[in-house]
Each structure stands twice: as structure tokens, then as C-alpha cells.
Length: 336
Image (cartoon, rainbow, N blue to C red):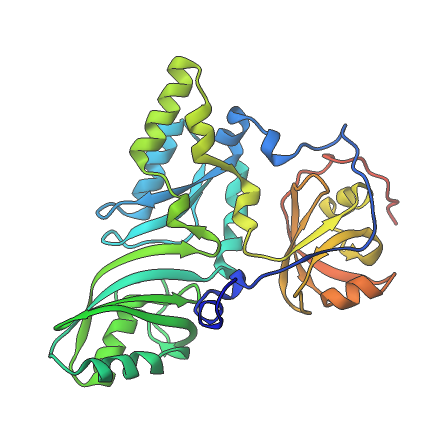
């Protein structure tokens, strides 16, 4: 069981959830397919890999290498890392690139090495870093892909791992879009010493951690074994179905008869729900899945978990993005 401190020093998406059953329902085996049954050929065309990006290349260059390794026409990454930064870089293939936007709501975690420009007491360093936990205001650095305007971001936690002279090694959990380089500069200003970011590694994107990553060389070797030796086992270890990218969001499971309606743009009504996670609040983002665990759509909740469980009618979630192809499940709804 997690201690209170462990629960506090984690990304919001890692708060424990429970799955509640609203009604018992079965799924028709003739429609759709469980993600774990996709097979290596389908995963190469519409799956994803969590790559351990090396220092040096841009994120765009790494995606280009992945496209070349897997012989892909289309691929994209979820969350740019600067050339000098290593770590977790989710990459999706084909139609699955449409799902990458979901990672914009996932918090990020980094291990950062900050260099102070003067030596000061450790107690003062610790006290100052703790002041940056919570809402902060940042102006993106000059070399950034966004407009340089002041914006609010949230720091969920800062854990100091080691202080050695002017080097401060710390772990930081933050909202997507936070600039750690700017954070270090701002910490230096508050300390009246000056500071800069020396090294940076991303260790987590939502529920995707560095333990889930694979190197470019491992991916290339696995693909070669599959193509030349007809051995898909290593490649299957590297690749994941697109559903893997949604693990940080609460889930709503719907009956087969409701699937095609959502694929055609209908909002989700309470009678379509079979199961759902605890902790959903009105306005939250959530993911809709089939009973076979296939992703159907991203939605914005119009009711809390408790309301969805208690009510029998009403629109409980509005569509944000449809991710399943029309016709995957039969149409049993009437157009008006």
C-alpha cells in the first residue's frame, strides 16, 4: 500500500480508480476485435511504441527513423523533447496518430540536473524548491515552438534526489507544456544565485514510464527478426495497441449497441453504459471503450461517476474525438 507521501508525490492520473459495474452485458464475438488479438502486422500499421529517445537527434528525426525501420508512411510523436533531452517518447503509427492528442492531458515527470551559479546552504535550496510546487507562471524560452506569452502551469511535486556543491538533482512532476529549463532559471532568480538546466531526462508521460521504453536499435533488431526469420515475438514485445495511450484517463465501457451511434457523432447517453471508473467529475476527459476493450472515442463528462450510476436517462458525455471507424459494429440506432 502507498504511503501518504507516495500518493502525494505522483501525477494526478495515477490516483487509484475502481471499476464499477452498472449492468451486466455480453459482447458479440462477430464484431470488433480485442486489442491483444491484433497481431504483429496490424500493430505495425496502427499501433504504437514507447521509445527511449537518445540525446542528440530531434524528436522529428527519431520519428523519421522509426518510419524507416518499420517501413511506415505515417507516424507521429506525443510530446516534443529537445535534442539534448532523452527519455520517454510515445510514437504512434498510421491512423493511431489521431490519438496522440490524448497525451496533452497526461502529466509529465522528469529527472533534472540543475547547476547553481553560487554555493548556498542545502536547507535554503530545499525550501525554495518547495515554493515552486503548485501553480506557477512561465514565459517559454526564446527557442520554443510556442508564442512567448506568460502562461500558468502546475507543478505537482519536486523531490530533491541529491545536492552536491552547486549541482542539484531533482525529480519533478508537472503539467504538460511546462518548461523545465525555464523552471531552473526561475529557481535561480528566487535564490539570487542564478541557475541553469545542465541535463534532463523524461521518465514518465502519464502512465507510460521509462520501464516501458525500447531503444531504436532494439526496435530495428525486432523488426528484422520478424521479416527475415518470421519470428514476431520480440516485435510484439515492443509494440502496443493504440489503447495503451489512454491508460491515464478514466474509462467508460459501453454496450455493443451504442458503439456505432458514437462513431456517427451521437453523444453518449446513460443507457449505453455498462461499466465505468470511479472518480469521474463533470467536465473531465474520459475514454469510451467497447466490452472488448477497443477505444471508441474521447469524451467530456457531463455527469459524475455517481450520477452515471444512479440515473437511467440523459446525455452523460459529449464527444471530443471519434477514434473507431464507422461500421466496426452494426448500426442498431435510428437516424432522425
